[in-house]
Image 1 (tube, rainbow, N blue to C red):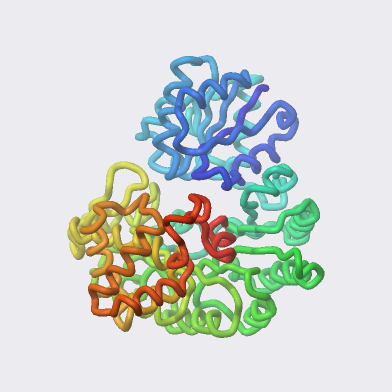
Image 2 (spheres, rainbow, N blue to C red):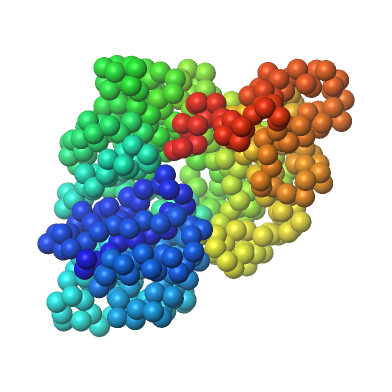
Length: 495
């Protein structure tokens, strides 16, 4: 094998779309290339051994914020034991602030940005000469129709057991400073007919879960409608073999024509990830986020009331200019709109993003290690930020898990943020942990909290019993049963 494409995925169910794009566009070199994916947490020496067993001349690594530390160890060890193997890096984590990174110093070459055309050219030079003079190669962005789509490279095993990532477009026209897509000039669509042909092929091969990675799926309404119609026709033709599609939506752009399409989908078929990030207009202006908050709220409310889509809404704590009270007001407002999940995120300073310009004026202190999480600002000190981090974790365990659907409404009451923050602080005093809390213990703690807040023990027990979590018998349930979740939530979390 001449070229090996590799990355460390966050979990096995994540199949790398980026590696498959590279393989699809390697031309004559494709026959000499294979993909070898790993999962973070593996022993570095074992990974090096598996790589060298393929006897590659070139190894290309996809480097991301979630795998850069382990990939750096992998590259360093690989170059120690097999210096003759050429290592090429690519991916968002090494595409910005490139030269200063240790992993870049260990590697032979780096492709920044788009690699579809630049990586094959670089490999040809490495293999056939003349040898590249520069270590860092800026990725060439070709016309979209020149990029070969990679979907036939998803294997039967991928389709059966992993999330199928797809994209109808790349890029984003918005300039939100915390996002790498703010560096794009616009969004570039792939030719729609060719894309839908590939989706048809995936469907015929058995794919039923499609996760779109487009940043702005609903930017072009006509394109959105055609894609939704594709899935709607599959659902209508085979209602007992449903498809499930995940899209990222711009929250304040939902015209009636798109609403009409969305309203036709049955439950369990659509998930929308919607980035609100902040409802504070001053904070939005600081980070160059254009958003009509009233329209965004109306659209979320409409989706909740008039569609069966599963709504996953994002908020970010730690943005410049936002204090806890401002974030709490936004959180409470979002809860009132009825999303199924609120992704409570903590700001991260992604390499290359313009958010860095606020570091001095707003005293933004970030963790120097990936994923570069905000530690403190001039509005939120470090201990308070730690409380927010714990809030986010407990929120996932209790509210987003789908296991406490009835109980969480009582827990939040008419002051969702304040009440859940009090619960979060109490949980930490009881457990001194935010991970590895067994479901039966979690349910017991939730019941105990409700009782301490004045709910009669019989009422608290009855309320918990009405939820999935309360039906777990700690003595009779198997470990598999304890870890299980309602079918809808399992499907969602797998995406």
